[in-house]
View 1 (tube, helix red, strand yellow):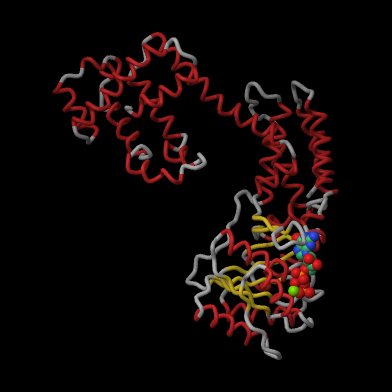
View 2 (cartoon, helix red, strand yellow; view 1 turned 90 degrees about the vertical axis):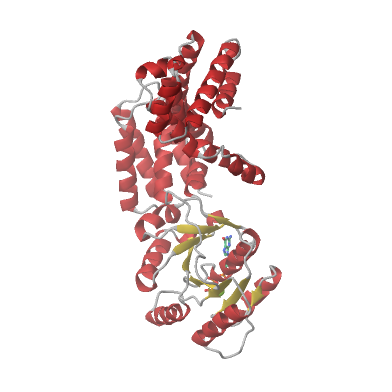
Amino acid sequence: MFENLSDNLSKIFSKLKGKGFLSEDDVNAAMREVRIALLEADVALPVVKEFINKVKERAIGQEVIKSISPAQMVIKIVQDNLTETLGSTSAEINLNVTPPAVIMMVGLQGSGKTTSAAKLALYLRRKKNKKVLLASLDIYRPAAQKQLEVLGKQIEVASLPIIEGEKPEAITKRALEAGRLEGFDVVILDTAGRLHIDQELMKELQAVRKLANPAETLLVADSLTGQDAVNIASEFNNQIGVTGIILTRIDGDGRGGAALSMRQVTGCPIKFMGVGEKISEFEEFHPSRIASRILGMGDIIALVERAAENVDIEEAKKIEQKIRKGSFDLDDLAKQLKNMRKMGGIGSLMGMLPGIGKIKKQIDESGLANDNIFIRQESIIYSMTKKERRSPDLLNASRKRRIAKGAGVEVSEVNRLLKQFKGMETMMKKITKMDKKSLMRGGMKGLMGK
Ligand SMILES: Nc1nc2c(ncn2[C@@H]2O[C@H](COP(=O)(O)OP(=O)(O)OP(=O)(O)O)[C@@H](O)[C@H]2O)c(=O)[nH]1
Ligand SMILES: [Mg+2]
């Protein structure tokens, strides 16, 4: 997939890699080559222009993070822009309607509609646990309806019984009715293709669309046809409205022009891709994963991201020194609490860990994942005077009452925070001998009070 583009880009970047410093000329020269590589990959010219401009703008004058080279920074910027060009975020299939959700497949002859209808049905059955009905409206090509029925049998998905001589609109009505009566979650309508876009085909599709009111109208486009695929998608979108694109034959596409131009030219997100003839060879389209596959530089991207995180590590070092000197006070604790919230709080951090689903309920009940706790603790600290924050020992009963009132909490909560802080102090005295890693772990636990 996209091998040619991938090769060309990695050649360009390997030239940059040795350099410790990149001048504006270096960046410009590299971008000229990237531009050629994109044009060779058959990416639409306006898309190439915008891409190059954005990368230049971001690369020149960009502050380079310590510990990575400027070249690595440029690669990261190119990767980010590739992702953006491909669509930024992954677009999920929309089934958010009263069932059955209708999905209408449209596209030119031979683009892969029927195969993709079956692939999508299998995906929905396996991954989304949906009960799917397949129905073919292709009454023009001999045996087209039979083709879908056979595929349905292979993947154990129901298909609408074929009635000879029935017109597309009548088939649509029957499919919707069967969908409702037999409790299907999804009805996939496979339509007929033509060699070219013609008014007769568009009229028929418009009529079916009006009748079926689909949750998704998916255009199936052959990525091997490059810019033609993009133009066809625009045309379909203008005439009948497309909610998403399935790009087929990505497995044979060394260039990637269709994939890279599709989103920007048509405004429609690519939702899935066909990566082979087998029914299982079908994947969700994730722009960031595709971008890193194209660049084939996952290691560098990870490095840059880690370096960016290190900025926070420097902050952590300062705190560590304060701890060693025994001057860590409530102000520092408030800073730490804010950092935790900035990182998305404990709840979202935990969400990233595999296998957390099972114990999620316990975590919720324990209140650990509740970011409100951080906010409340912060506001307690900020209700103290500067002097009190530096020397919490000053806090007698009347001061505590004042602080609780200021923060809108009970005095017991103020006490709990102080107890935690005391616990941290004791612990900090112990851990000054330990290594940094256990310091971080101990610090977290200290904040949680246990
Ligand atoms: N390699 C590869 N082949 C594919 C892919 N998707 C579809 N095909 C093949 O493309 C050919 C045409 O696919 P169909 O699904 O029949 O295309 P269609 O759009 O329904 O065609 P019409 O109904 O005639 O308009 C078949 O031989 C498929 O196996 C893909 O992602 N990769
Ligand atoms: Mg077909």
